Length: 338
Image (cartoon, rainbow, N blue to C red; front, side):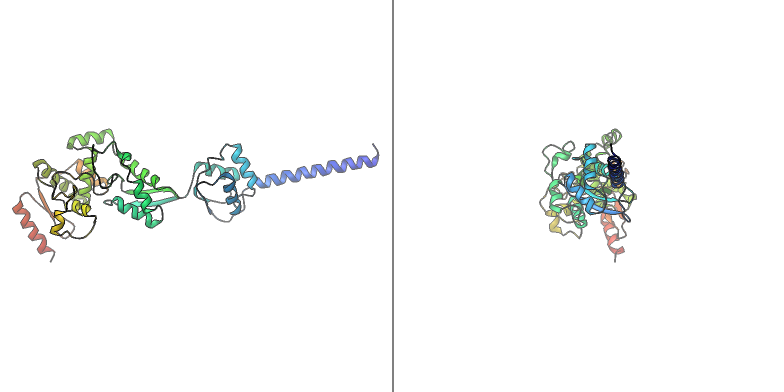
C-alpha cells in the first residue's frame, strides 16, 4: 500500500474511532438523569400508550430521549404495564428508575376523611367537592348490593346498599382513581373488622354483622360523648328485648332525607321502614357509617336498665327507667336550656 493509502486508512480508522467514541458519549449522555430543578409533576391519562407517555416525559424535561425510554420499557416487557395517574419525580432519577416507578404505579396519593356518622350521600358530596370523584359516578358504584351480599339479609330493601359499610377513617388513594377504588378501600376497612373474635362477640349480643352495623349507626347519630355510647346501646337493647319500638329520631331523619334540624310531629308519622316510631325492631339497615367506638358500644353495652334518654343541652343525656322519670327529665332538660 502506498504511503498515501496508508495515511487514508489511518484517517478513516481514526474517524471511525472518533465517531464510535462520540456515539458512546451520546448514548451514555442519554442514560443520565435529566437536569430538572426541584420535583416535577406530570399526569399519565388512562389509555395513554408507551409512546404517549414518552412524549409526556420528554415534553416535561424528565427524560433526554423518547427512544431510549421506549427501548427500556420494551426490553423489560413493561410497555403495557405503565399505570395511569399523577406522579411526582425528583431530580436524579434515571430513565430506568422512571420506568420502574411508572410500572409500580407510585402515583401521588389523594387524602380524604370520612367522619363518623356520615351517610353514603355525604361521602359522595365530600369526594365531589374535592374534585376526586363525580357525585353521580360514586353513587352509582355504591349502589351495587353484590359488594356486601354476604352480610345482607335475604330480601332486604335498603335505601343505600352500602350505607354503614364504608368505614369512617382518613384514607389515601391514588390520584385519578375511579369511584370503585374509593369504595373498595373503605369497604375493605369495614370487612377487616369481621374476624373470628368479632363473630364470637356478635354471637354474644345475638346480632348479625348487618344488625350490629345498623344499631351502631343509630348509636353514632345519637351519642355525642364516648362515655354514653354503651349506655345508649343498652337502652336500645332493652327496648328490643321487651318488644318496645326504638323511637329513634335519627332513623326518622334518615327516612325523610335529612341529617340536621328538629323533627315535627308529622315527621314521626312518615311512612318508611326506616321510621322506628312506626315500625318495631331495627330498621332495614344502617342509617350512617358508624365509628369503631359506636360499634364497640353495641358489642359491649353497659347493661344499665334504662329505657329512655333525652338530650340535656350540653351534649350529654339524662337517662331513666320509667316513662314518669323520663317526663321529669324532659322538663329538667328544657329548664336547663333556657
